[in-house]
Image 1 (tube, rainbow, N blue to C red):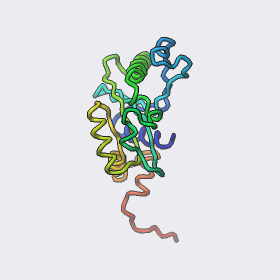
Image 2: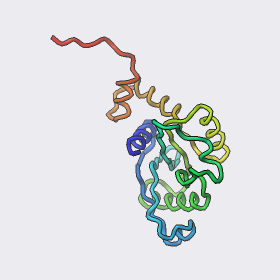
Image 3: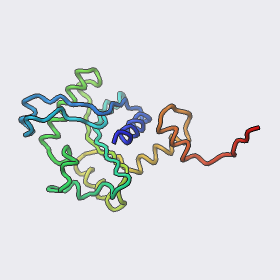
Image 4: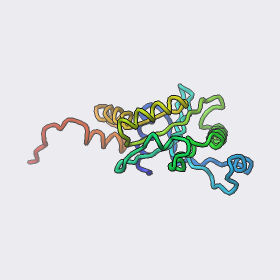
Amino acid sequence: MDAFEQLVGNLLGSEGYWVKRSIKVALTKEDKALIGRKSSPRWEIDVVAYHATQNRLLVIECKSYLDSGGVHAAHFDAGSRYAHRYKLFHEPVLRETVLARLKQQCVAEGYCPADADISLGLAYGHGTRHNDALIRDHFNANGWLLFGPDWSHTHLQRMATGSYENSMAAIVAKLLLRSPGPLCETA
């Protein structure tokens, strides 16, 4: 969902990241053979973010699932029928190949230095408290990053009370999360 990816990008931008969305990873023929997808189109990453002072490159898959049952911990179990939605989290060879090629691409384009630390993460908009805890444990055990609803809410709250910023996320946060002030009267 493009709007959710935009929101995640805005929130990461508020943390000092430079953000690009919908990045196509140019896999080589050898890469495609290695991942078992010889006719695969370029792999697409929802959000790529780089923090210069931390020298940290984030690769974020985004799933809003706002009007659904949300993200479930079972989606990340081996053999899950939803594994196709989370390929980078289920397939180690695919993950290593795509992340390595993406980093090479980012270095070649001047987006980050060759010694940048690269991390995979998931940003999601909805999940149950029970699933949130299980997902968090699973991601921690695998060294992956997790940006759940609490993360989004915290950043939107900060934007609502912060100084003016010309981003959709900041404007909506101010409209919806600020305490209503006195109504303006027109003459």
